[in-house]
Image 1 (cartoon, helix red, strand yellow):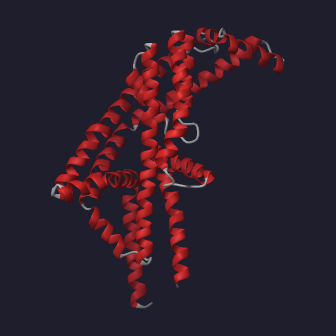
Image 2: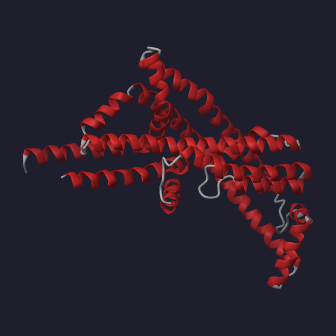
Image 3: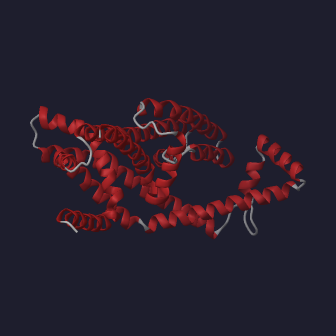
Length: 351
């Protein structure tokens, strides 16, 4: 074994050891780096135009993101999870759906809506079943969904301490990637295996991917939540803050987005509450769905032009491996995979 091979093996060993140690913090650090990239133009403005020290500019921007986005989102998430936990716990203790020993009031009220009643009648005739059996099946299905949701909410409550550590690392990551961003970029440039031209292209594409994936999702989610909150306010719906944040979070769900939440809440309100409020939410749900199809492409602007199949695989794969944060990390990793393939192809032609 030559000296060069030995040095490569030692370097790979310590690199693998470091990745193993830091893997548990991969998600918050990656999100911190992506958010820092979004803030970097403003950081450059404060540092170069206003002559602020890098540490001061990074501290101010990190504090702003924490106060305006991270802390409100965290507090609303905890409030929403606790509210859902209390509601689902009540469902567990006293099932209100059409199940053995349960109260069938909700399902019966839902079945009294004209178009729902016609649908149940058609289903019963098509399947040659009694309408009461169809209602029992629907009630049992809804009850099982509610119990699954209750288990999910309970798991979310038990993971709050881990979430706190992740949020702390996310905030620290934003600060250090801003304050030491030039040093980090210089390190990767000096150790890049690609020529200078391909290295700069990789850096540029990484910035475009982070901006496209994060900004498009955030803007679309904010627009949808505002539309739905306005519809709820017109209808006199309560708990609009929790509802708006729930719509915002659910807008990140791959493929289906916030539609199950918005249309489901509208249907629930129509059945159990005011018809006027329910139809206000229903109209807002339609408008929010249409707005998502316009807002997201405008913000993306080709920054993450992945094939639809690749994008879906990246979204669901990211969700499965990294949890909710995988909605952002999955497309970024998939996009960078193709960026590196393209850079490798160009380097091979140069050689």
